[in-house]
Image 1 (cartoon, protein in one colour):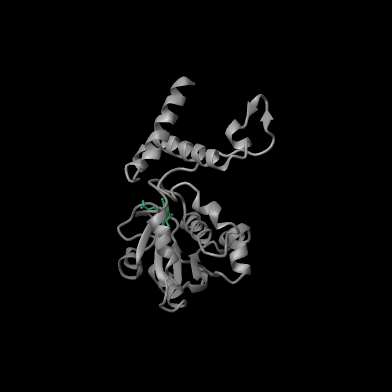
Image 2 (tube, protein in one colour; image 1 turned 135 degrees about the horizontal axis):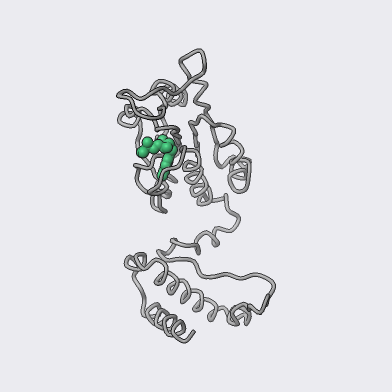
Length: 243
Ligand SMILES: C[S@@+](CC[C@H](N)C(=O)[O-])C[C@H]1O[C@@H](n2cnc3c(N)ncnc32)[C@H](O)[C@@H]1O
């Protein structure tokens, strides 16, 4: 998969992509990353890529020409994504959809954003990381990249660990513990220590369901619960009442 970034801060993106799963995916040729400095496509002598918005008002805007030239330099095979607070909110389905694409370009805005003519004519999808505004699209694009890369077969060592995570089956992950067994009087739940795989499975499912019900009840509305799930949820509620 080819993933292009168009950004005014290439070093920022470069540093982020030199760690963890993204670094591994690049090293193993599972993804090819092109980080395009927008300033390379400036059309003026001072390497500027921004200008004042027509009609006045505060701030600057990334101009049409440098962005279009940067996009053209990549050919026309990519699915073009503009990171924007006005976009569709990112979730697992949005990410999985990008997984099917051989090439995507992540266009990072700055200042007041980018010239609307780019959005209207050259962007396939606008994606938001939430209902708040950050200063630039780079971090939002990195969220997309990180969420995407960890789902590409061959990148994570243990795909099982991904499949048991929050949202995978429509519910949240169960609590996890590591050594030591007891610290400051706080112990690991007994069930996780007895080696009984069936009991551990039941406990994990119960905790996932219970935690989802208390933290994100909206998610449960879309999950088809089995008879066992109903029983586990009741057990969870009863146990919480006793606490
Ligand atoms: C300060 S913001 C511009 C906000 C724009 N004037 C608005 O109110 O819709 C600058 C850039 O940050 C990025 N950005 C800000 N918030 C974002 C969000 N929630 N999701 C994705 N990108 C975001 C976009 O690329 C945007 O062009």
